[in-house]
Length: 358
Ligand SMILES: O=C(O)c1ccc[n+]([C@@H]2O[C@H](COP(=O)([O-])O)[C@@H](O)[C@H]2O)c1
Ligand SMILES: Cc1cc2nc[nH]c2cc1C
Image 1 (cartoon, rainbow, N blue to C red):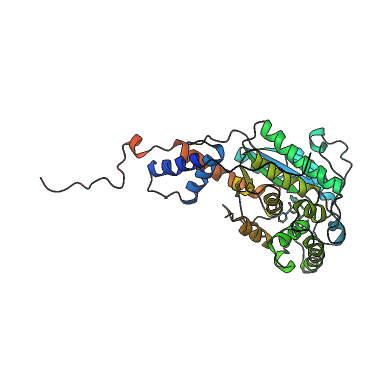
Image 2 (tube, helix red, strand yellow):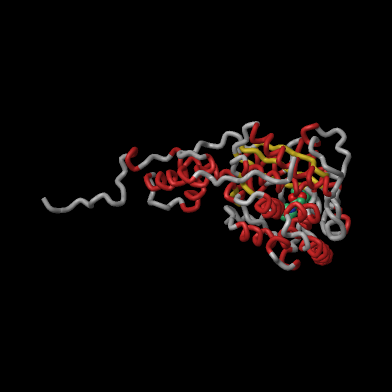
């Protein structure tokens, strides 16, 4: 499959206008549900219908992969945690499993580049595996030319598989020790930020770890800036098979006219690249939350997305998107199910006041 994406069409303008007009007729002062109104209008536009229908099959795909840079002291945890957490996702014991269950979503885990041979994992998990770990972005390319193409093909195929199986809202989660380093490099490369402005604490590194990470991000950025105008070359140099697949997944979700709730730092980095791969894709995304990672705010500003929640999360896995999913469901059902002033016999704001004459 080629790395060129089909044209992204915009969400439906007619359904958007109908949704704005319907909100004016619902039994509440106009605009009183604030951003829930905007969110419902976005859902109606994405679905191309007003009233919108409740989501039937929200789906989280967790993109798992290791990163060579983790061997250089940039994470508080060892790389083996990535594979161990994949096993935890599959037995339902991780935060993503609980949050998805509460929010009414189902979870799929995909191993793109975990540093294991994948033995014992279900075929659905390993079918798209590109390699074991990705290159250490501070000193080498994350991926070869063939691998970046394979990762992009995988991300597109995963989005297609999910949409073809009936997913009507998607979340991209991530799991990968060390992945905040390449994500921060990508965000710096695409926003023009300096290394120190993008380096966060990830899983909870101390000050010495932060300094090692700042050096790794500086070195990675030096390599990434040379290719920042070419999204495929940028993914090759400074991402990883997991992040490259996620970028393609986000782009293809937009091609398939399927709304996405973005999560934290890693999904924002992938989203910045996805917008370069498939211009206009960001119209199909909302930001679930603002992570504590400083680069996340920079990425959201560049994407012109305002996060729904600010809960000081820094977990990944899709957790922040899932925390926001009930708001998306509420916004959808408010627009679909509230009575209008006319239906409920409630007086509107321009109803004449009774006069005391007569
Ligand atoms: O989503 C976020 O904003 C986020 C912020 C900090 C850490 N994480 C998660 O923590 C892991 C990467 O952290 P680190 O320190 O190993 O680079 C990875 O599994 C991410 O899902 C995620
Ligand atoms: C335990 C653990 C769980 C995670 N989930 C996402 N990133 C993670 C990082 C760690 C260390």
